[in-house]
Amino acid sequence: MKKIGKILSVCVVLFMLAANPVFSFDLKLGDLQEGIKDFSEGIASSLPFYSTMGLNWSDAYIGQLFGLPPRFGVGASIGFVTMGSGMFNDLLGLFIDDFEMPNLNIGLPLPAYAFEARIGGIILPFDIGIKYGAFDTSKLGWEELLSGFGLDYMMFGVDFRYPLLDFKLMRFSVGLGYNLVKGGVSTKLGTGFSFDFENGSDKYLLSMSDLGLGIELQTNVLELKAQVSFPLFIVTPYAGMGVGIGWSKAGYYADSKFTFKKNGVDQNLEDLEKVLFDLFEIDTVTNEGFGYMANNTKMNMRFFGGISVNLFLFKLDVTLMYNFINFGATIGLRFQL
Image (tube, rainbow, N blue to C red; front, side, top):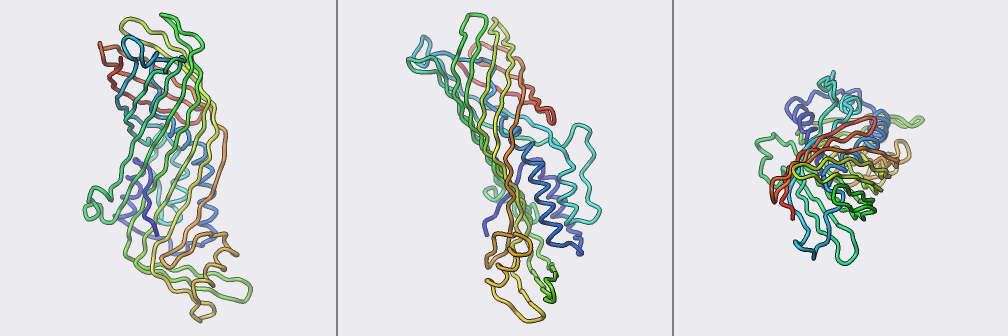
């Protein structure tokens, strides 16, 4: 089964899990299913907002690619958004006795970074931006150092902006953007675990050895946005808003060698697949484990704004973001003509 990681700051959570795997052995598969559905609902509100980090450049429109000078820019940004810790408490509390995230008043900060580029339009007044950021511990050779813990995430985005107003001291544009975030966390526990459950008079026992666990997340966001900026000599203040729809999913997998018994008699993979789907809606079963994904679609609105400092051919950008539930901040540096 494929190895999946999660988003960067939940690294702390799963590192704790890898270092101290104290499991609740009265865990029921039904509880796990409900937990991941609730987790998906929370993710549907927060992860699309996370995906909009980056490409929030101070200039509402950068000009024509083949102008004098040609208009383009390249750079990078880093920052965070907050996410409520309650959803992680509820889910990971199913696996770990007395688990509780640190109580941070601002919420759980999830960091990210992205490389960014934007080019001006050709003939028509528009510009196009693209961003990309990724992190994967499996490609860094850190498995032994992290005691079987794995983390990865990938962020990608692209947008198209068209200026409705383009004056010397004010620019106003509207645009359409697409953002993708996917990733997860995983840990290899090297221990055993078992589930027992009933269906009528039948009693089932699912025993797992050399256990690995993972959480996976993904969101796709389509967003309409508007932005105004005021290009002054040294600084450029700006503000904007976006309204979008996010298609998000969250799930788990258990990666293990296993045996499955019905009333004490060994059963095959097909039997396990049917029982887990009929009783718990678990929709992925292979020779290497099982998993489940919950899907969620939700509308999202956000506000963003900030200021850039113009340093000749470079711009230092600070952005604040807010969506009624979470907030975030980024800082970026870019070369821009």
